[in-house]
Image (cartoon, rainbow, N blue to C red; front, side):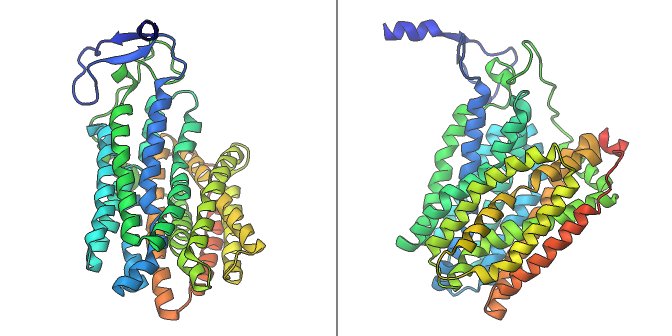
Length: 450
């Protein structure tokens, strides 16, 4: 009886005419009255993939001291690998969409996870600092860069008409959630079992997600005989361009770079990256450890940033629809500067209420800059706004890479992270000024719109 009920609720769907390749399956099972659209399963798989990719990117902050103790490498040397990772993560992102258009996002995402696993696992066998840069910097940087904003945006654009903004926000927050899950695990493993065990756990986690992507993700709704969520019945998605994406991205960069607005946005977002991924994410744990705080405690605090990061991003998106995004960015960066200037006085061997206040605020502010920055890119550059944001995001990671290396060098030279916090505070104030200097009204360049 149970089998009879199952066969009555499913129907066998033939392949669409002309469908070939790995992105289609011989037979798809679809319920006649599905309770949940296939798009949500694709979004769920994408979330898990992005979460796994974020795992190894959460590791540097808790592995700096163990690597320094074992190999004797300076913090600047170790941080240089982090810098390469962050820069490649940003620079590769604008071109990831081109790869997804040519090879399919399922193939690109699964390959990227495999590359992340190779990079994470490869560190177990390293004996020289250049191998750290190759594995931790190049391989993991390219792998995670292939699945960053571009993957989230592609999934949302192809599979959703309704709830597209919500899905984009949730997938963007996957990195923070990955940090929340993996950071305490990596910290405890690094202390109890050694940093090699921690690296292997990250590699295994990335590999474990590959089958999920291959089984669940499809490049287009038509691959499984359906339409995007919220699309009208029979509505056909616009054809995806198979070539010229890289040329388009470079062309948009060349045109946008001739405008003052682009450089103000890029400068502000570079400082954003420097004061988050580059400085706090990479160096907060060793800086707190310098003041006597256990690494696991510091990692737990940093993980809490991920919780409030999600809340702050959603709230910022709501505010962006109601408040001038230039004002929001100005306020966000100014408050960030004040908090960074106070941080050296807050660090101690125990977690005081003032440190809780810093963690909560910094979490709320961490990615709150993304919604207003995206809004300004679209407002200022029209239809090319998302591509412009890709390049602005590249500047974010470039700033992060510089800060990751710079803060490590400052710690090696001065014996303290305090100068790095103060420099970052000043830069945040400059980012506030740059954001407020963006013109309020703009007429998008017709070359960019077209």
